[in-house]
Length: 384
Image 1: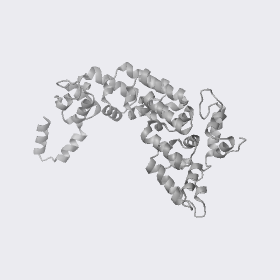
Image 2 (image 1 turned 180 degrees about the vertical axis):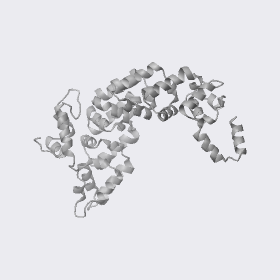
Image 3 (image 1 turned 45 degrees about the vertical axis):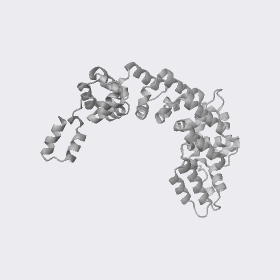
Image 4 (image 1 turned 90 degrees about the horizontal axis):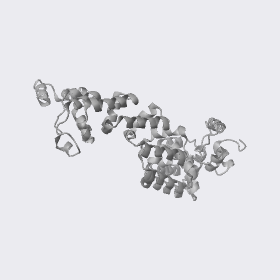
């Protein structure tokens, strides 16, 4: 029928460009083929004749065309067996109302993971309950996380989600208040294997950087995406590059660098880290790599700035001022940070959590080698 319709409209002189606009603007204008076709039949269990009510409902509810319906079926062939009224409609209603999804967000979610339409109601409720009550996520944070990683709604609470939560809280000492932000910004963590991915990755960082689990937890809390990096392709090459390049002879020195700028591991090795060291080498008066290294060790945050930002800072250095002095850490805003830290100390919320609930001062000594060094880095007096 579609062929006849388009043939008739074309005979009236309507150009193909106009017909394409019509089909894009009115996706329900065309009809879906009820025959699954050879390719779809090879993908998995599928009905020999598709259900017209289910296809029409999907197109109307999600505002999609026949090709999009075919994509849904190709990804999740069991969808061809679902009843529109008793299966598809209830789960779409529940997803949209519970997660407060817009129609566009619901369409995006279904196109990415149509198997969610086969999810049981009680399983969905259990997962939402876990995220909102155990992980203390707001509905806005949960919606954002699910749109980034739809499979969050398919993970088992008992065997997948809860063990990851305990890993973050108990093994890495991450505060409960940080969990929602971690899941929202890096939801794929909740699907990664503990034994084959997360724990080996943390153990490798601990060994290379001389850190304890809670210090790695501090890095993860600050930069959750670090746990999603490949150990072999990202973490290991970066750490093995930084140690000799920055003349760091002890693992703990590398660890101090990581604690000072936790996002370092997310920087590209050749395109970012090596490039910044080259820029600093070329722009100091001695044209010395040693001087560039000294600048970075005094201000590791330079390594996580964009190349453009670092280049701009270098260009703005006055001609009569040494670049090493110009790029020292700024004290601007430090007093506010210190005041906030003091409030945290009163509430007995240490910078780094600890299994034995050590005092906040002990946590500071894990980051800085001495009280004097910590005072210098924070811009306060040692007595404070």
